[in-house]
Image (cartoon, rainbow, N blue to C red):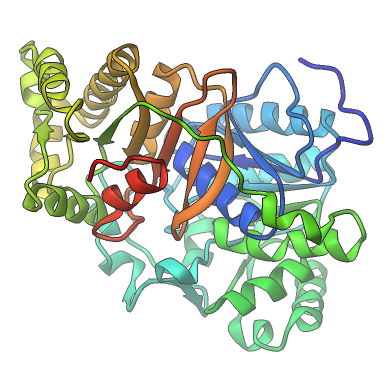
Length: 435
């Protein structure tokens, strides 16, 4: 591990994200609010310089709870060494988890390590239609369990009541700060926190419907060592540091500057979400080159990776191409029934990671990647250790550039995020002109 950062360069906010696209989503919010932010891929060996926030991206959402806890505690320890003043545990705005975790176990462990007795849980992200009312999570106008998330291949969400969901994952008492309290502002939210503390509550689901609610919640959390939630709640945290005189609001305009990256471009999609399916369809309907990865063909030993590379090499010098494994939930279930859930996912991730590494060697320098698990596998294969965070492409998805002498331009997209034309928008923002 590195030595502790000097007082002059110490970051203010230390964040732990349970997947890679979630980490960039969070970093995007912090940059929007004027914090110079770096995202690391796992716990790094050295400290980034001249940053206000660090987001450590883990791949811990679907691993066994004990492993997720261990990885999160290692990240926390490193962030403490850097001198961070407050800590944030970031998970998906759809609260992706199972009855065993990993949100509850990780939050419990972080609270204990920080010597704290209370935190909030708020996955709300209004810009992407995620809202909470009376403890129930909505995706646009549908309850969580009616939104398509009930069909998620790894973390099917069948209960919209997040108080109940979180209580199943933790021995801590879980409470609710309901919207009538939230709507009255930060002072009333702080009062609600104290009432719950007196009742022995250690974690509270917090309702929110609009961004203004998130700013109020963030202000109310200024004194909490640990905050947990989706990226939306991060909107309200930078303002606390500004009010405390620790963050210069004038630097915000330059927080998202990135280097220019030249080279070829590719889109890699592994997510099976509704949004990514629509984005793949839009790309194909626009008569852009696309090659589908078939997991059953991979499992049968067919040369799918070599075929995908040959396809890409044929097209990439003329225009960007899409390599995708995206398919419908019904087809995903059929593949999982034949191969098993874990093997099916690993086959796709490894294939796309191998393709990415080969394309990098062939001159590709701009990568748009759809899916959290896919993004994690691909950035590892690309040898990326940290990302500088740039301007927003779509809510929850910024442009990024890898650190180092020869940067790569990347857009890491959660499966559920982005407009139908996201792939094209992302490529243009990363510097691709051949569209």
